[in-house]
Each structure stands twice: as C-alpha cells, then as structure tokens.
Length: 378
Image 1 (cartoon, rainbow, N blue to C red):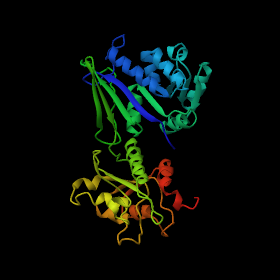
Image 2 (image 1 turned 45 degrees about the vertical axis):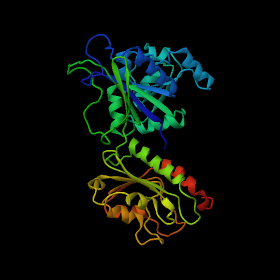
Image 3 (image 1 turned 90 degrees about the vertical axis):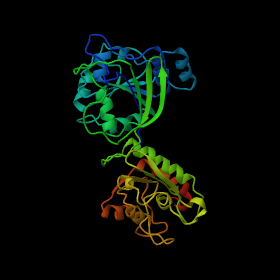
Image 4 (image 1 turned 90 degrees about the horizontal axis):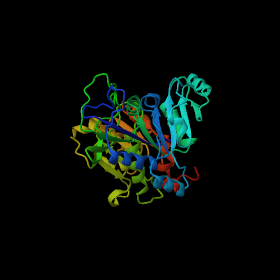
C-alpha cells in the first residue's frame, strides 16, 4: 500500500538533546528557523506529534503566516493541515491547545486507547489501530482515507526513532543549535536500538541566524526483511528508467539500479540501452561495475521487473547475472508475466540460491505503465 511522504523535523543541541530538564521549554532556534518551520507546515497535508510532545510542549501546530494560509485556501486546501496525535494509551489532556486551535484533528491509538480517547469528548476523529500501534496501518489510513500525501512529523524523539527504525522516513530536517545540554536525564532525539539502513545522504545545509539546517535522505538500503524508505526511493528510480526505454513489441521495458550498502549508487541501466536491442536492464547496469568491486557482496539490485530466469536473446538470464556478481538482495515491483517465456520465476531462482527478494506491489502499476501494450489488457 502507498504511504505519505514522511518528513521528520527536529531541533537539537550540539550533544543531541531536544530539551533540558528545566520547567520551561528550551529554545533551540530563533525567528528565521521558526519562519522556515511555518513554511514547511504550510506545504504539508498533515502534522504529527506523539502524546509526550503534547504533554511537554502543549503545541498549537498552526500555520502562522496569514499569506501562507491564504495561499492554501487559494489552492483549494484547508487553511491548516490536519493535526495528528499518536497515543498508545489514549490518556490525553482535553484542555491542551492542540484541540482548540487550527483545523481538523485525528487521534491514532490502540483499541483500548480508542475507548479512553472517545470518552474524553475530543473534537477529533479517533482511529484504533489494533492491539498495538501499527505505523504501517497508520500511514496507510492517512494516505487512503484522509488523502495525506506529505506528512510532517514534529516529535518527539520516540516517534522519530520508531519511524527511522522501521524504514518509514523519507527525509530528516535537523536543526543544530550552538549549545550543550549535558544532562543525561534530558530527552534525546534518537534512542538506542537497531535502525534500518546505513549512512544517510546530506542533500542540503543552510545557515539560519546562529543555527544550521541539515536535510538528509535515508537512502541506504535496509538490511532487514522490511522494505525501507530507501527501497522505495531506488525502486521509484528504476520505474522511471523503465519509462525511458525505447519502446518494443517483443520485450519488456525495465529499469534497474545497483546500490551499495552505504547508499552509493554503483550503476543504473535500462532495457535496450545504448542501441543494443536485446540488452536487459540488470545486465546493462552490472556491466558498468568492476566485477571485483567488494561492495557488490552487500549491494542491492532494484529492478522494476523481477530479474528474468529464462531468455532467448542471450545465454545467461539476469537472475544468474545478479548471483554471479555476488549480489544477494533484490527489490522489485512486479513479477514477470508469461508473455514471452513460461516458468518466468526469477524470484524463485534467486531465493533458491540464498538471495533475499522483496516485492513492493505498490510500485507495480508504475512498472507496468511502459509495458501496457504487451499485456493484452491485463
């Protein structure tokens, strides 16, 4: 199922703290960054926080600039983004400013938490997610039921950590403030635990008075069985490459990208690349990499169509080329139909040899789009 684009936003001290332990909120940034946050809020469909942030900060989560609210109205959007509160227990303060300012609100909670939240008479849509908080169900509901395409997450540290651990964050906007907290009891942005992926990619730095904004994309492939935001990023690129293939009535249009474990793109390719009428996408990409490159052993191949197990144009199918290169992880959008060959089971060939294969069906329509003329109405 498709999810919204998830943008994590936070400000921290130089030693990684969100706040100190004093009675008042520690201000980590200033007017220039506050205006930037207001601009980001105006650009999204929803803003999400956890119950801990509600208790600690009592935020309003508004778009403050009148001209930005006017621009939203002119575009046919609500004046304020949907405000989303996540709470496992449903034990919430009905007097908090969150409920009494801005536009629509929603509470995502557990089944027991939903009973408690509804008993408070909150002016909010209460959505139970089952016996525990399920981030994938939450994101699917936001996307499919509430129409949220861009989600801004403003805290707190537990929420940010959970989304990164599960590979569900598409961007991290981190503001670094020039001060130290140094209190081990103060809240930190990220908690301990296993995080999906590896090294993040820095896409922007910007000075805002005396703080620095750093924007990161978690684009390194995840090592676990669950697909990550990075997997979605690279598979979407593979689908874009498929759409750029020269058309054919005798072969599929496929795109492929090979990515190292640290998030470095090693190569990309697509069907019929460079005028070769029979080259396949994975074949074209792998041919650009030194076979002795040690990064291949921990790399991931992203292909819009599963690597082929049989082909008539050349002796070695792409699934065997992937294995011969030493790659043991493949992410694909679409299982090959039997349009041109029978027993088209590249996934079976790969998994039988010990490779991990993840299929992300939410990208299947994108992968099929440049091939609809071959599918006979399927």
